[in-house]
Image (tube, rainbow, N blue to C red):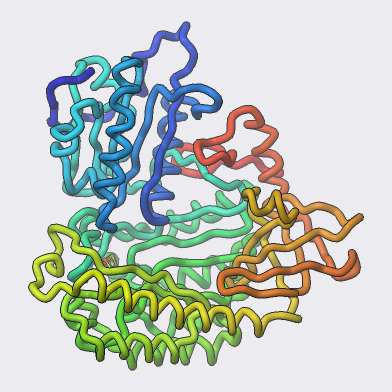
Length: 512
Ligand code: SF4
């Protein structure tokens, strides 16, 4: 077990040779805590590990556990150290086991992690994911914990091998980092200034994904509207959306997240005029109080936010708009909270991710004096979620009787087993549980079905066609890619349970 800490940066070298070739390939497990960025980074981590000779831990104990951590939520640290604590006795029993911690919390806490949990072998940051296999090898060889955190991006993460979680849909990073300074957010400190990827590289990755069978792509950035600022083209994001519209076979384009301050009408026009850009927008409000927005250092005001929604709905009728809201930011008064309720009522979000404010050490808001008592935050939170639930349920009920076009997803949870319904997402990203009428063909994940909406709750729709005449199935290349990936890895699902493929830089899903 490593006792000391080695923190000097390493030059990447060849993949590990430390395991004896006669032994079974080392098995890994990746545990992801956090947002879509983290989930996409985990695809890179699994891609890197498989390129280096690791295999997913299926029906056997892992030889490597990688935590991809999040620093945004208050209890992220507790969760991580709790899980690390559970692994300490496992590690004592099995000295082959290695433990690595990466992601935002690793970037923030650095060597503190090995001080608190000396059985951790490797700590790596958000800027040097690519070093993980080398650091693991070095930790094993030197019997010494390796902590490597870089302050700036080493390689744009998309140049790393990626194991896609789903064959029919993929995330594509357009930028990393953020130039804003929201006072509650630790992202700029941990992910650095915004770095924009060149449009040609992004489109090449989208093309490669589509060639491999993907029918849906989500463009990812902390602030997609400022995309292009680094290479001096303010209209770059709208151009990118339109360019995605020209990619044959790409059926659904989504993006997350835009920032209201930088949201310009050319993006709304591009969304409205590009048929494969889906009628859906996730745009964080955070607060409906202009005073709180100012304290949050978010440079739009509620009027501007509502104006964007109005223009989006004018140009894209039926667009589903979702948001993020923080309740109980320091100094939030009852009147400020009422302003949030008013904006929520006026916005008619189809759903909202609501968060109770919690202090993040290292952020300006964490130092603010007038923190709101937890009981007050809880009570406001409940009022907000009750209002949003009522709006979501009402909007969903309004869809009963319409037809939904669902991209079938690869989940088969307990609920699906008990109800025999499958699930997927509508064009507007609503979650829909649907049944396949008797005698009708079963869809594969990645196929598209068209069915009537017959029921609604706040967070999902139900679609139970009466008979086969109300059910249409369109087999897609996405379904074919899913099937091919299943066949390829039938005995070796990924850490998430879903198969995928690894490619160097570019996705390499098999063409159906
Ligand atoms: S826009 Fe604000 S909340 Fe979003 S990543 Fe940047 S600093 Fe954080």
